[in-house]
Amino acid sequence: MKHLEASVVLKSLGLACGALLTIASAGCATVRPEQRAILADPTMQFDDQAADRAALEHALDNREGSTGGGSVRGGGCGCN
Amino acid sequence: MGLGVVCGAAPAQAQVASADLSSALFVEPSRHSGLTVVNPKAVLSVTPNKWLSVQGAYEADIVSGASEALKGGKLSNVDIVTSATHFSDTRHALTGGFSIKRAATRLSGSYTYGTEHDYRSNAFAISAGTDFLQKNTQIDLSYGRGFDKVCTTAFSASDAASGRLALDNSQGCFTDDKKRASRDISLNNFQVGWTQTWTPVFATQLVLSAALQNGFLGNPYRSVVIASAGDQALENHPENRARGAVGVRGKYYVRSLRTAFSAGARLYRDTWDIFGQTYEVDAERYMLPWLRVLLRARYYTQTKALFWSDDYTGGEPQSGPRGQYWSGDRELSPLSSYLIGGRVQATREGRKGERILGLFLSFSGTVSFDLLKTNLRDFTLGGSAPDDTLALLWSLGLRGEF
Image 1: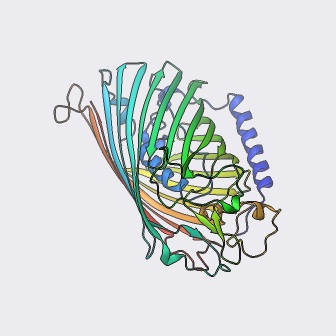
Image 2: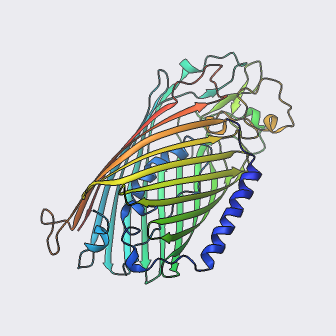
Image 3: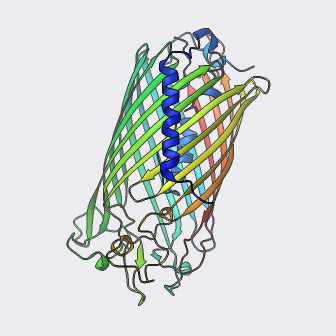
C-alpha cells in the first residue's frame, strides 16, 4: 500500500480540527441534560471498559512502532 | 432498551468501594520462537465521599517463550531461527492513586512502581479535566513522568558501539556485579483530549499525544550482524526519541438498529522517521438489557525507522544513519497489521436498597477475544520470514461495586 504523504495528511487533519473548534466555540452545538440518555449510556463512552482496552493497547504497543493518540474519558453522563 | 440504565438506576447511597479483577492472555505461536504473556490485574477503588476516590492496583506480566537473540538479514548467511533461546520473566507493578471530582472539574494522580529481573520503573501521572458549555465540551490534560532503569552488560559510554555485547541472561542485574550495568531511561508523556457532544446521538473526541524518551532505548539482549564476516554487536539505537500522535474518533448511535457505531483514525510521527496510520471501527449493542456485544476491526500501517535495515552487511555508508545505528527490532521495520475481535459484557444491577448475593450493588463480567495478523514487509531472520506473526489475545474481567 502506498503511504499518504505525512505533511498532506497532517495539514488536512489540522484544517479539520480547526473547523471543528470554530464550530464548537461558536456554541452552536448544545445538547440539553434531558437529551443525554443515549450519550450517557456506556456504549457511547470513549473510555468504557478501559481495562479491556488497556490490555489490547499493551499488546499493540509491543508489536508496533507507534503509540499515543488513544481514548481519554469522555461522553459524559451529565446526570449531576 | 438498556439505554439510560446506568444513570437511571444509580444507587441512592454513595458507592463505597469497587473491585476489578481481570486477566489477559496473549499468545503468539511459532515453530521455533513464540511468546505467551499472562497479565493478571486487580484494582481496588474506595470512595469515602462524593468527591474523593482512592485506588490501589496490582498487575503482573508473566512472560515466557523463546526469541531470536541475533538479527541478521538476507545477506548475513547465519542460522538465526533455530537458535532461538528460551526465556521467562515476570514483571510486577504496584499503583496507588487518587481522583478528586467536583461539579465540573476533576483531578487525578497516580504513582506506579514496576520491577522485573532486568528492568525497574517509577512513573508518576497527573491529569485534570473540566466540562463546560452545559457539559457538551470536555477538556482533559494529562502528564506522565517515568524514571526507568534497564540492565545491560557493563560497557562504558566511550566504548565503540560496535564492540558492545548483549546480555545473555539477567543474572547479576541491579547488584554490584561488575559485568552488569544499569542505564537510565527518562520518559515524558503529554496528552490533551477534547470531547464534544454535537447531537443527542453523536459525539467526537480529539486526542493529541506527545512523548519524549531519552536513554538506552534498545533491547539489551539483542545483537545484530553488522559486517559481512559475521561480526555482531549489541543493538544500537539513538538515545533520544520524540513521538507525536493525533487521534480522532466519533461515536454515533443509530436508533433504528439500537447500535452505537464508532470510527476512528490516528496518525503518528516520530523523530526516528516512523509514520504510522491507524484506522478502526466498532459497533456495540445490547442483545438483552443486561448483555452487550461489541465487534471491532482495526488496520495499522507504518513506515520504517530511518536507520532500520533488514541487513547491515550490504555496504551501508558508515557515516549515514544506517551506518551509525543498527537495529534488529521488527517494530521499527515497515509493517502493517489487521485486527478483528469482539467483547461480550454481562451486567447485573441490584435493585434499589438491595444487594446481589447480599454484597454487590452491581456486578459485571467481560470476555473479549482479538486476533492480530502482522505483515512484516521487509523483516527477515537470516533471510527467513518469521512465522510468529499471528497473535491471539483473550481477556476476562470481573467487576463488583459494593
